[in-house]
Amino acid sequence: MKTFLFDLDGTLLDSIDLILTSFHHTSRVHLGREFSDSHWLGGIGTPLRAQLSRMAASEEELDAMLETYRIYNLEHHDEMAKPYPGVVELVRRLHQRGANLALVTSKLRMGAERGLQLLDLEKELTVRVCADDVVRGKPHPEPVLKALGALGVPSAEAVLIGDSAHDIYAGKSAGVVTAAVSWGPFAREILEAAGPDLWIEEPRQVLAL
Picture 1 (cartoon, rainbow, N blue to C red):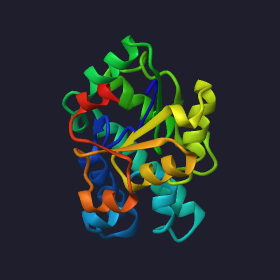
Picture 2 (cartoon, one colour):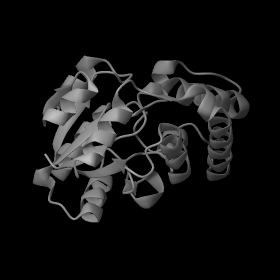
Picture 3 (tube, rainbow, N blue to C red):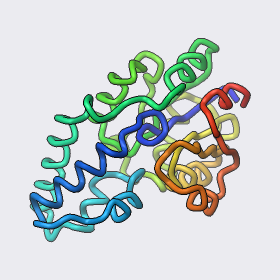
């Protein structure tokens, strides 16, 4: 493979605790209650607006919830998020080899770029498709197809690497090879149900693809 499309949260960036804490804070502020981690976990990998829209009573409340989430998330980002072991070295190795690389994330561009700064992978992942770049986010194939278009490569030559079923469904619909990582927050049986083409147990395995 010469083209690698990476998800961000749960794949490159260990930010799951940050995301869940941000959801809990937002629901306390706006709804006066908390929901379980599992309630929020199922939506991770899809756009934030889509997740919170199920909880908001109006567009005005949704906008307020989004703002609360973003402010809290960015304030606590650098202290709570960190790279998964080996992922930074992997992306740099692929870049050095001349591979085509892109970030395909359901995060808004502001948050995604903050994550890349923390990972120190800004120069390696210059092609970025974020939630505010598409009409339909994952699991729809639009983000994947947009990344392929930006790179100028056909789907048959690319692999999408992610941690959630949403990544796998998006990749399959776009016609790319799909690879599920084992170190994300989702149980293996959930990912197995999505039917990934490959399993990645540790980052260095990607170098052999």
